[in-house]
Image 1 (cartoon, helix red, strand yellow):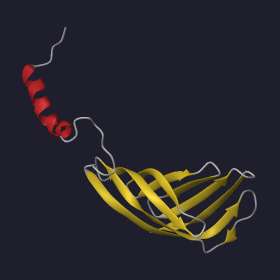
Image 2: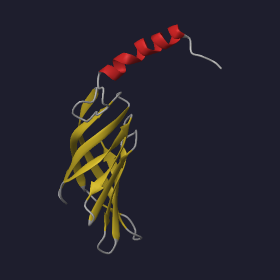
Image 3: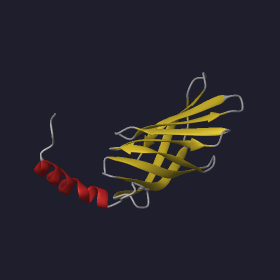
Length: 141
């Protein structure tokens, strides 16, 4: 039977203990995450696609305001408010690097916003009445 070396165990405990000491119960939130940042983006869309119909030009835009937080600055949890002429909604999600995926809304209207690392974006709304889906293609910065 193999046993851990006592010095190795002591070193591991010493190295890891600062990480555990910051938040003993592991209850990190966006408000107390070690890494936090504000989110403020404007998204402008050029194409609107309605279910199986052909896509058309559009000038639809939306604004995102919120917070991101996590244990590092690469992969974080996001909570943002989507503000548009259609209406406002809270969208929780995640960001990895510059890419972000947010979703939320009500049962009647579900929202999904996906932003690629290069800023290109797709915003889709799924309505239960119909059901129907509307997608917008554009970019966020």
